Length: 254
Image (cartoon, rainbow, N blue to C red):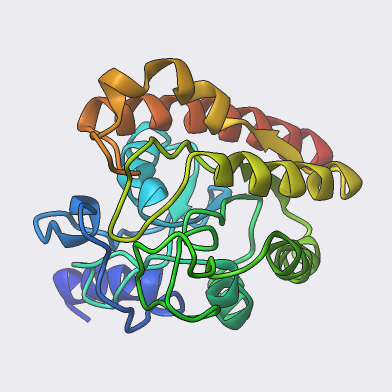
């Protein structure tokens, strides 16, 4: 087989098991619509494997995390087979549906994950993606359903033997619409998630607290998404935590 064909085959394999056809991204999520990025990569079988699961916030920092950890770990996230579109892991309903497929892509050393911003958004009918700006309409899931779904997802991830890290859901500023999200919701959903993570001895990467003092400079106005400098700051924090967990995983194997 010619070298360039072999490389193309490996590149496709890197994201093949994680591929999907996903719904259109939410308004403002430029990280999902930028086709200039390449999401496929050639994994090094000698390196540990890291999986990043999350919504468009994690999409915004994944490629920087991969770049900074090059030579230290293979950093995966769900993506289309052609490498031109990352997969948004959406809410926990979607997580429960697809977690087996995502986990089947490799043997994992570290899994860094988050669900929340989709669960807490207002929708016309609970459990759907029908966006609503009406505060009287339900959120996609209640806190109780969110917690139950997370518990199911965690059970699947723990079976991999990977080091698990839960990233708290980043803040929502007042006036965030299309769909409506309220500033109080991340606090409530995070509180439930943190309690669950502590019960399961899972490390917490508190991205909510990390970015909160810098929202004016890092986050887009009336939007849950981040400016480039915000995504870069999030990436640095995620890199720090993943690196520490890789060290723990390595020590456990020695």
